[in-house]
Structures are given as structure tokens and as C-alpha cells.
Length: 137
Image (tube, rainbow, N blue to C red; front, side, top):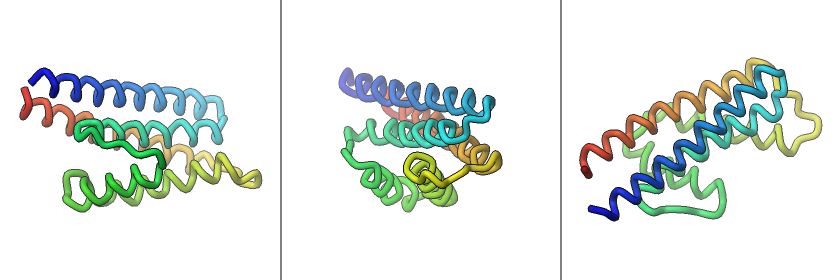
């Protein structure tokens, strides 16, 4: 049982990191720094997913592996709604464009969607972690 608390604690640490990324995204959005906001919103999503994977002690070096595993074992099994997979995929593309495409100019709406997806996923992960903790504790 002590081991489970450690796992849960690490998942919560990752979720807290996701929330900090979201806060940074919102700050950048407020100041119309859309490229930075898109990056931080994506990382909020990424760290929220990694919070879920921490419960299994799963980790991957590449982002695409994290996203693929989450989709296969959490979205396809309907632990998370299927629509979130499409939103995460879009968020990943926007982040890549924001980070690597010098000609990409994100819109206010794209950036707001990115942040909204991060908020939605963080909320879903919070609920998932609470349910996990009820079962374990």
C-alpha cells in the first residue's frame, strides 16, 4: 500500500506540473504571446497525460509514444472520451507549428482552443486520479 501512495503522489506531482504549464499558457495568452501560449498549453496536456501514465509506472522518451499509449489504453478503452484524442492531436500539431514553423502565425482562436483543450484534459485527469485514489486507498 505504501508503494501505491508513492505512485499516486508522483501522478499528482505531474498533474501539478500540468497546472503550472496551463497557468503559464494563460499568462502568455493574456499578453498575446501566442507561440509561447501554444507551447505551454501543449505541455500542460502532455504532463496531464504523463500523470495518468505514472499510475502504471509507464514512461516514454518520445512524445508520440506517450500520446500513442494514452490513445490506445485510455481513449480506445473509453476511460477518457474519444473526442479528447482529436483535440490532443490538434494541440500537438499547433505546438509543433508554433515551435518549428517560422512562418506559422497562430490566431487568437487557435491559441484559445489550445488552452481550452488543456483545461478540459486537466479536469478529466483530476477526476481520473480521484477515482484511482478511491480504489487504492
